[in-house]
Image (spheres, helix red, strand yellow):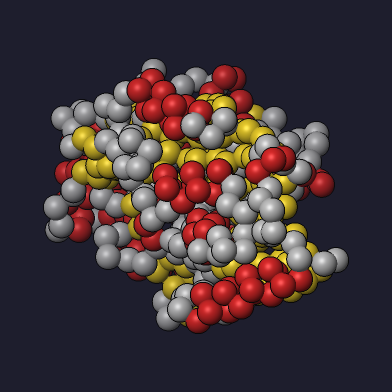
Length: 469
Ligand SMILES: [Zn+2]
């Protein structure tokens, strides 16, 4: 019997040191420094190089696939078990307690952008292979840890890799939650586009000239801005209403007059589009406020439409697209972008839909609703849902290992997010965030508990060995 956690403990100092050094590389997508062997910028190139160098030092066969991705491999045989990680991170944002790339250790946690998503678990997976290698355990399959490079921006790296290299038959992505995620919902973005007709301006009322909210469809927008033109008296009244509104509102707002136009700004609360109910959509809140000023303001069709179909509705009920199945849970929607300027309307809605959802019916329903205000609806992007049967040997093996090491039942989960697991025919997400831990990915003060990092490493080592022996 191998004592996996003991094997990890024996390498703890080196694991922590390597994880910190890895986190100290600012591997954010950077178009200013991309080119040549750095298709996503110098920071990501450096992080990929670091992961490959470490892998090589631990006895793995490595390959750098033109800077788009790379891998480290051990074992023999035809089949490949894939472990899909990524070395890029989202931008750090503001408000950190310690610098986001210092990788400071406090309270037995490592704080850094990428600590939990996904460089901490990437280093855990490298150490898992290191341990199997150093114990000279016999393998009948190959195990390949694949380092993706732009998981957070466009998946160009992993797509390039999978075209050039062999596809692992089965595998997992250490890039979400424990225990095991066997279902990932489909992810569609629908864009509504149209024009505001000029004659919609009512006599003796002010008018919204610009309305902007959100810049990524996969986040709940935390800012919204409206510019309003009209007579001084009308603008004064709207301003007074806004002041009163802010008193009963949980977040900040701002107003000022620029070039004779009133500018209103409103904050909300950002959240991941797969959990829109965790956030406050600043765009929809500001629209809802504007509708309350109709005594002074021209109400455009699009505003009324958005309020009636989207406000405080996270499940698409008002759009008529609510749906749910046992494996996936409910469909969710996130109106992530409102861009109304120069008479052009663009509203983008990100939809996370269950595996048995009828896509055609869903897009038809949205199109019909959009048509009522003269907007077209375009299916901009669509990633099909992903699901692995719970009886599959991959799932059963991971389940057994997880239960053995943690003493907890390994519940099989569904998420609305998309991980690299769906790049494989038979892939699941497996860790690294343990149940009950606070999710800090993409947030300030992102961190990983050192104890969890060690536990995850031990679980990955045994899981890989059981799958490949
Ligand atoms: Zn990730």
